[in-house]
Image (tube, rainbow, N blue to C red):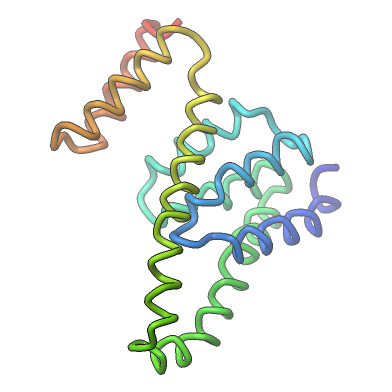
Amino acid sequence: MTGGAALPSLALIFAQLSLLAFGGGNTVLPEMQRQVVQVHPWMTASEFASLFALAQAAPGPNMLVATLVGWRVAGLGGALVATLSLCAPSSLLTFGTAHLWYRFRDAPWRKLVQRGLAPVTAGLIMASAVVLTESTSTGWRTSVLTVVATVLFLRTKLHPLTVLAAGAALGVVGVLG
């Protein structure tokens, strides 16, 4: 199923992901990849990882990957449906609950909820990193590049675009084989 026939599936997938994205869009990347690679085989894991990399390198919101997935599956209509489906449900829920959240800002239960959601969010983000690492580390060279990039991001103040450009250059010259 591709093109216009995929639009209802795209809408349902991204609407559900929207409501699961505690802590930001990157927390739902493993499920997004599972849906578009395994459940609806619209692309390979490698293609998904490439779209994610392109979305991260582009200026703008960090969830441009949803737009790119929609585009890949169903063209412009898919891009619009995926983007709106990812943004609208969580935005409506946020607007609807913001008043209550502010009203109970000093309530003990609210602080407990926030304290409980922080590690869950961190775990979701770590799961995203693992899924993307598995998809992109296709050999020992790309695995080494993943480790080196991770160390650089964690231990230095290098701008991420510098590391991205270095990785792209290694790919261009054929070092990553």
